Length: 476
Image 1 (cartoon, one colour):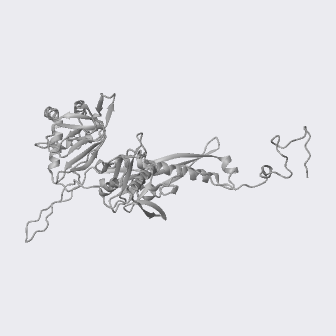
Image 2: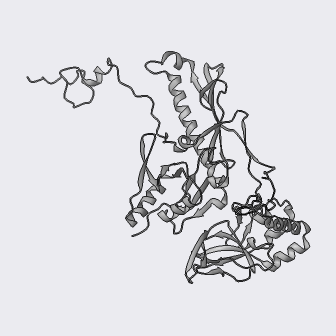
Image 3: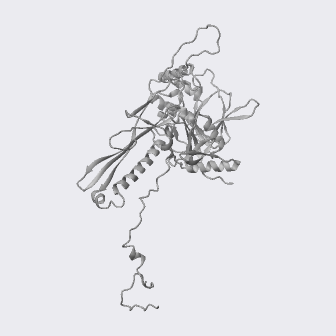
């Protein structure tokens, strides 16, 4: 049947020129239909593997104290620098206390004067900074660059013993020795910049600065005391004896200033208008959906804090003796093996997804097939049986480098534990509560949503980091 044309002045269907319908259209029909709706979706929700894999300790007092044995051999940290131009680079004086010999030194004037004695030196790729067995005539601070430590093997071959990068010190370990000599050679793998301090200048400065001289003497005395292989005060023992010799006696000394972790928090005020809560609650409760997404956002921020917070986050609190740099840039199986060898019972690797992809590329080049393991019913990639889990909270730096974190977890294994408190007022989830704050004069209902948490590393080797991991593809 042919539909006659409508007169020009008749009411036309929407869309001039469209063919007129002979039945009710879908647009009009939907006015009478009930649509199927999804719950509000949120793109920022991640797997949050760190929160899932950490064992959580209930901290009833709000503070968690980590008691340890007395540590006599302190580790080294990273010094920092002020850059005012290519030739005007200075070490921040207060950060010199990150060097083991100056740990705990409080004379700020002496530190400032010592910092001014360092001189800028540019280093070219391949240049030898120091030679094994030669007298120590200078101490160095690495401003930037990549340096390789190596020694001569039993048959004259070169054996790489470590990588030195930004913020590290070289030569200061010889302080207190009668005849200081380099224990390994150091070669620049890339062009870089170091700050150099003449050894004679250091000795003259110590001779005329009583507080500095006393600091070095105390450090030398501490270094001379017997320690175990982890640098803790030794307990005298005797083994393999016969007869009735007099047995040595002693005790296990404790650290008199143990670290305490106070629970941190993430908070927000959720606001819902009473009109929305009263009239628009079907088929979904508006307040419940608002609260669900708010809690998801808080948990995402909680994991970010556990990784990046300067007070307790992993990236800033892993001992510098447990940090290594990649051997060549990309994350290789050799790098992961070295990271594994630094602790017992490594439970998990955490890395940015791009780092995991970069590691798989290195495996592909070597013809290796990483295994898998089962976690909560999920098949996840693994290396040497240790799950390799994605964590997008680990940042990728401006030079396209990131880090891999290795963790041993649990109090029983002296590992890493998460801290929270349960049983708090109006608890909504463990360690998270939602408290009604009333209705204001604009008819807004206010809810205070708070998550309490922290993280503790029980002993230094419970966590380690592979640093300076390149995530970009290299040209074939």
